Length: 99
Image (cartoon, rainbow, N blue to C red; front, side):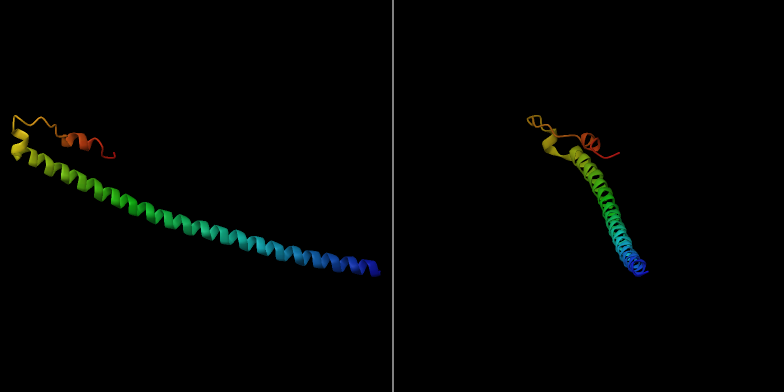
């Protein structure tokens, strides 16, 4: 009878220890999932910001290409017969734009 009581106590202690360890494990898993979710949200915000910046820079490049094209029409240096320097065409710049 005495040994059975000791075995029961050990089982109870082992179950309690196991229960506490399982709680710790679940808490750790939840914290890890929360951290991953926060990192995901942060990366999504950064991605959105970078896409916005790409859009602005693309618009600026298009605008500057138009300014250059308009300038080429009136630039006296470009119409000089002694000028052997080749100037890149804006068409070459537009081929660099992301699609």
